Length: 517
Image (tube, rainbow, N blue to C red; front, top):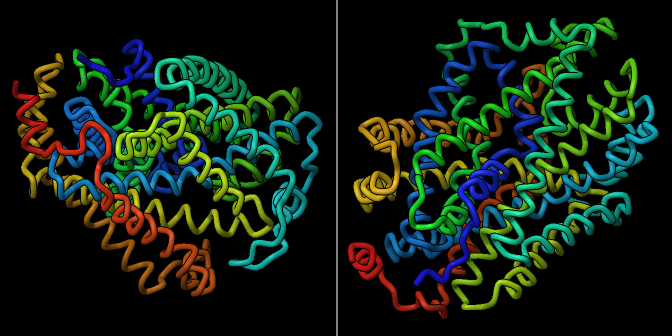
């Protein structure tokens, strides 16, 4: 008899999976990435990346979780005992991401409040760095706590851990049924307002205008695969964990297509909204689109407040809606990230969900306090770059190579997916995972290692600045490489204790025998 927690409905799972995939990066990363890599022409490699890497890996991870009915560590253990470490490595990557992702949500909460009276003033850059984050220390130094970050950070953790305490069906599913529709409605309002602003059409023309000369540029293809990879929440335990809560009669392939295209549709919508607003900013300030385009933290917390200041009407309302979108998108993703190590700890050590939430979530919450200090932005920036590039991306490469080429599990996974899905998988899926994805990810890792080991990072003017963002060597060693390597080391350590739960003596062979019966 099935005793594992389950989603109440198929829609509940899809909303949760899309809530995980749709995060802060969809809003502040995709528009700038597309614009800088060929505009409208970027959508060709982007769509190919979605169909040859994004959706194939989604199907693979959905199938793994559904077939083996476990968290990422348990799932990889059932695949082969020697691969359990990959599951724990993925969980530790998720753990690290949760510690600083929560802080960015806290910033968005603060800015939702600031938008009520536009208290960020005219110099939005100085307000963020000086007044709000109070960054008065050098990289590697912490300084004191920043109350404006600390208080909303505590609110984030209380809210998210409270939801997770309630479990999969009553907690995560209920929250996503509220947050995702609210996010969709609010963001649609923003987009409609954005495209009706003066100058919006110029912004959209710049966004969609294709530069086909970029199609043959390998970096554009790497950017496309990187965007798909990082935006779909694949290769760091989330989708395996979420799909393990699916009922046994679930259409895996359809769910993957819906999730993948739903995430990409939101990214396209985000691009339209962002560039409509950037077009307005360019027209009102007399600048070119090139000069106002930026991504990441700068777009959300510097450029957008500046734009909101110049809105023709309802500045405060628009500002509140925009930052509310960031909060909602962030919360749905954060819940999924934390769920990975709650499930892993509960199954490995045979403890209740409540204890796993308290221990795992509580530990992450304490560590996140580092990013609420005056030097927190430096630690956040470095940890985010290295854990994503040498955690998530490398994990994806290792995961695919192990499953396809070392353990030869693709045929069994394909059979399982076909048995429960309307769409049957063909050679497209096998070739994508066996050839295309490993080659692209391998090339990405080679270029990343080359850039970082040889210190070949450049600034916006193309000048070589050495380490990432020009940070000092010691800070990069500990705050960058140390974080990425630490996730792997702790993953290995968590593999060592014996399983205390009902899966303690289960081997890969035994689990597959049960599936066959």
